[in-house]
Image (cartoon, rainbow, N blue to C red; front, side, top):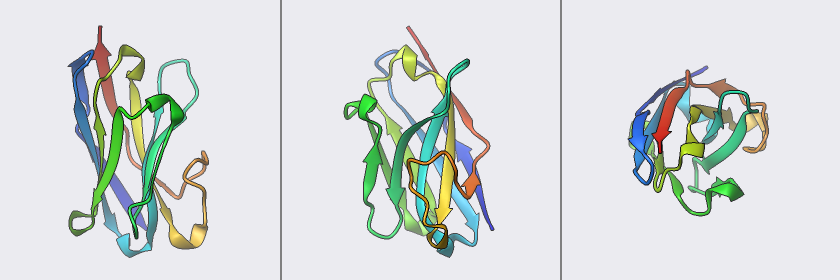
Length: 125
């Protein structure tokens, strides 16, 4: 089992930056991918970004246009989502996920092995 704890959300003005973190504990050796989805009120959950633990291969949603970056620190079992040039439409609850190597899931899938509790990001105009 893996437990995920998120931190770092908050309120920021448009054009500003935030970094959210997702720290894994438990059987972290099982992790293949970590990443984030987000969900705004009244909208479906959507993929944001993901990183493969072994080689740091990254994936991003097309709509981000280079504004966000994902990284990881293996020594801390933590993944980071750096969000720059934030827009009001980025306002959402951001949910961290992790997948085991043996589950062979696509990071773009809505189905993941583990989820964090979510952290709210609010961007004011």
